Length: 76
Image (cartoon, rainbow, N blue to C red):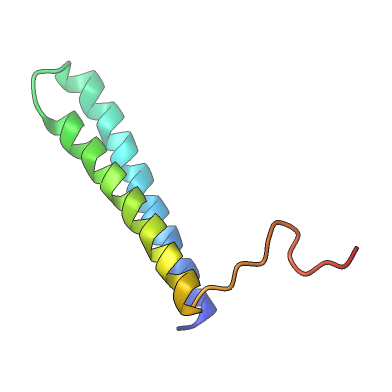
């Protein structure tokens, strides 16, 4: 899997997570607790966040993603 594709997958997940977070805020303001849309949207956000976390862990364990730390490969 190419580096660009991995980056696009992570960015896509982040965009969906932010979309659901914004949708939850919008539904909370518009519906004022009368519908379940806020709960549904925030549940999707949590599910996507957990899925992204699990995918990153699997990627690290299988060697598809190589963690490099905060500074990269800089020498002291």
